Length: 254
Image (cartoon, rainbow, N blue to C red; front, side, top):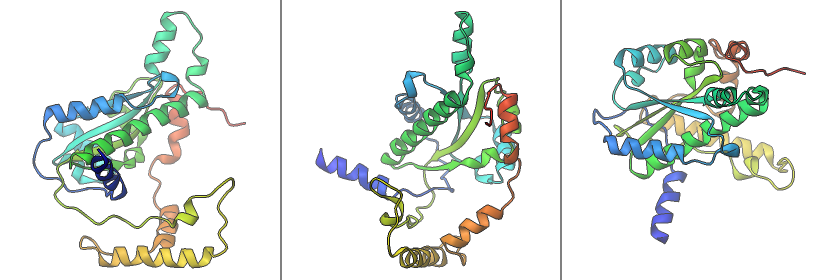
């Protein structure tokens, strides 16, 4: 049992995103197990506020690949979309002639985000523990309204993230993470005295990682990546607030 625990933790500590998959189908029973793992994840107040969509239609996957700019979505591997879902609970409340306001406010929307995100991470951990590879696709939010239309999502739902699962065609090295002292603290926000030195060391580690990796090496570091991300094309993400309102979520700014 101790060896199994160590092996599972070791898998989590060496997580890498896989973007190239072998043309080998994941067995149906394995996918069902992964889907069951997602469903058995902890849920805020047991409201089970997410829906999992397995996208199998080749044409639909090609359209989503174009939307995300990641062509591998249309290739080998299994593709899922995790959807924040208050539609079921709103319908149940309506059937009982109960008020639904609290099912569409900020608290309810965030609870759905938590449920969907935790379920996705549980699925990733389970998949990787069996030797499968995974990659998250936040890029489905490049055009949230198009994703809603493509998946025929009803009001009170929102597509949160995508996930590819499959047999890895490569095994990239794990990316270096922030120094513990910058990311973990006690009782208050971390304020290490040697912050500049920590950042210099970390930026160099990230630079070395990208310069030396076998696939698509580049000249960058973490600070430059943050700047590039802040100045990149937001696509249609600036429309998320308006789209959420159209989907029925009442999220006032006070």
